Image (tube, rainbow, N blue to C red; front, top):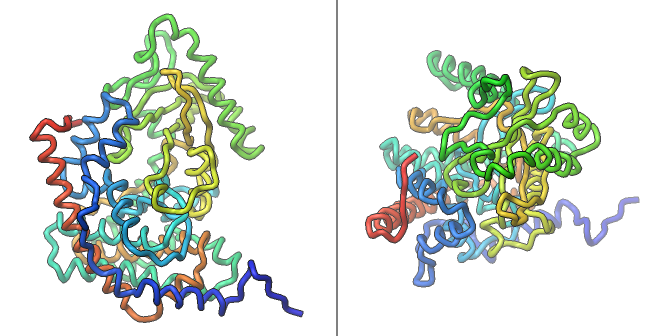
Length: 468
């Protein structure tokens, strides 16, 4: 006998929910973006974020955002969140990345030591309308394509390919068993087979080299680059201020003696967020040094630390990154999160969306060197990493990369959301795809205006920018 509970609707009921959402927010209604008079000043939005960051690092953030419209976009997730939150949405909720621009899709290592393609950055993750991630990804493609001087037609093809891949794969997931959706992943070998059919010989070689190079970006490579042996034979992190500043250089001499005890306490506390077997593995390493590190574009100014751990000897490293986790930029506009600790929010969102995660991914709430308690999440600094270089991509390669990103985002959304409802909303036609082309172009225009507003703010001494 088959029963249906009210909290477990049937596939037809879920599809009906997706189709009903078209009445409230037609698919064609996603086209274009027109800010109204209530739109907040983008510089005010950035400054509110900066008020919570390390003051001496904020000019570096603005300096990086000034470099180009694309670099600005990477740091402007809060601005776009406010814009998306001000317009009607489908109400079809999934776990969002919150910052799904194209450089946050990359090659990563699974715990089984397979190379996979997945989303990487979850600082802003929170449940919300599925289309917000799709819009952020589509706009990033247009901005990157404009930087390469691609034509309007080429940009349109890239965005349509991305959104079509998202839509078609979501339909695939809608017809799959629940466990099959959960186990799905984008293995690099499968991707390489696809590339072999789509790229010429030269580009295939480039793709193979990129995958091989990703496997070298690991703890050992970071260890060799970022650390040194002192004259006393002690392994320490190389200083490179202001980008890398050892904790000993941030503390008075009288407090340096407490460093080892503080580090051990931090690692022990964070380790309690790991599963038992991973906590045991962590215990095989001991902390020896720590440094503040400037990372990314949008994250510049947040408190980020790299922690040098050693295992059996000085050539057995583990480099961890502890990154401050503040409230998601989506929080004022999306459903309330269920985690009091913002680091736990990031970790929970990452585990929901990623097909395979870092074995050392965890969280903690600790007192900083200023005595204030803050939330952090912790992961390996590097564990195989291959990052796209859109500035080197011709139109056909960017279009193929866009397809990979769209399909990967669909997989991530299908894990935590309702693929049947999302697929029913999107439909089999290209109405949503074409609407997103118009949205991405319009929002890319707005991003350029916001980028210019930052340049004007620097020119007028409203904010200070510093190159790095």
